[in-house]
Each structure stands twice: as structure tokens, then as C-alpha cells.
Length: 189
Image 1: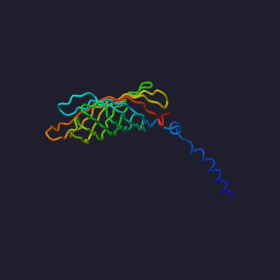
Image 2: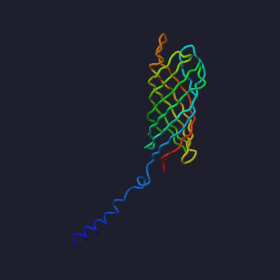
Image 3: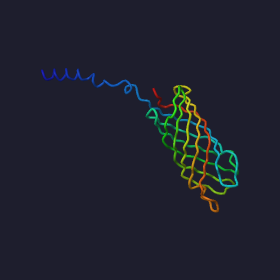
Image 4: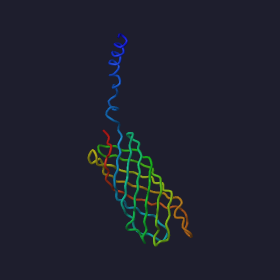
């Protein structure tokens, strides 16, 4: 009987310690997950002889920010309109990002994305898929607790492009801007 009493008393005295945590861990961290859509305009840096305008189209992005300054990002965009001679591009990228600016509702992020770039060259010269490395940056404005507005820039490097017979393989450098809106699935506290 005495053993049961001490066991019950010990359990009741130790139970509050199980809930003794620092405040930030009980309320959640600074993590967030954002998904969104964007519209992009890129200068395709195509093969010599084609100096057409920008290719434009829609895209999708996501951000996973588990720490206050570091996160990961992914993008997919399909630039299907306005290309010279029917030229199109697609980008499928993922990589780390780092917050370099935080001022009120504005956050500036530097990113280094890697993945694949796909191009259909003008006048049906050919198509190709290439390794794509894309440094860039995003400015995110927190419009509301759940909605972010985004302006982004990327300078891409496709080292093995264009890989078409009778053309030099000196790489291609598409660059462009995106504007989008994101929704916070999980938001920072």
C-alpha cells in the first residue's frame, strides 16, 4: 500500500515536468510552407540568328522555410507564348534559399536553383533538355497572414546548350522575371 502511495505521489509530482517546455516550442517554430502561381517573361538567349522577344507563360512555385533564414524552393514554369518562330521553354528547378532582407512585411531571398531546362527551338530546328543552374532572388511581400505577393528574377545557365549540329555549344543564358501570388499552408507564428 505504501509503495502504491509513493508511486502515485511520484507520478503526480513528475507529471507537470512533462509539460515544462520553453514557450517557442509549445507555440511552434518559425516555419512556413507556401505554394503559389506565377506569370513569367524570359529572354530565351536562343541560337544565333534569332533575336525574338520574350517567351511568356504560367508557373507554379513552393517554398519550405523551416528556419528563420534558410529554406528550400521549387519552381516549374511553362513559357509557351510569344516565342520567335514558335520557340518555347520550360524550367523545372529546386534548391536552397537564404533570407537576406527582412523589413516589416517585406522579405528578400537569394536562391540557387538547379534542375532541367527544356527548349523547343525556333522554326522547328530541334528540341533539347539541359542541366539548368539558376541563381536568382525573390522579394516577398506578406499581404495578409496567409497571402504573399512575389517578384522574382533568375539568370539561368545551361552549360551544354544548344547541342544542335553545326552550332557552337557555348551554353545558353535565359534570364527573366516572374510575378506571383502564394498561399501559406503552414504559416509562421
